Figure 1 (tube, rainbow, N blue to C red):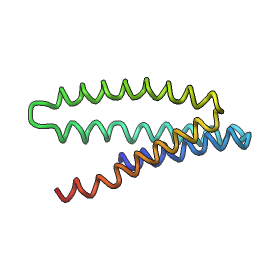
Figure 2 (figure 1 turned 30 degrees about the vertical axis):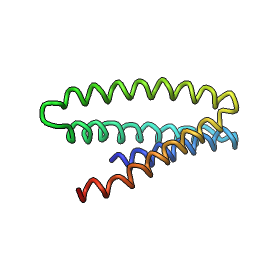
Figure 3 (figure 1 turned 90 degrees about the vertical axis):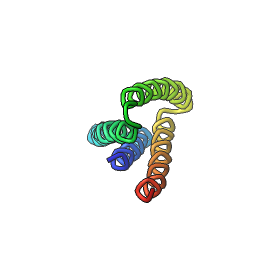
Figure 4 (figure 1 turned 60 degrees about the horizontal axis):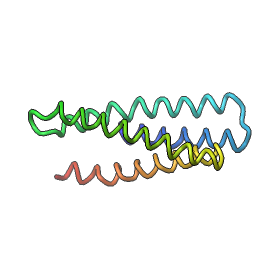
Length: 118
């Protein structure tokens, strides 16, 4: 589900960037927002489940807390980076977010086989 969520986030960011560059209509904006919303809804719960499930016995609470702290720091840094990218252009900022999601998808896709064989 993490890979599905990241794929939807990538597609949603690209669709939203396309809406900005092509002056697309509201229907395409809705498609991009739906893909992004579903992507977050698929990726985050699956990520929490995977991390807490992989935690050593008795440390699930600490792992969950660490995940939330890292998520909040990442969100703060993301706002800073996206704000700087938006100064260049909103469309470029959305395409950069799509590229970041695509890289995250590749990282998870490559790490997945190692996880199942170990």
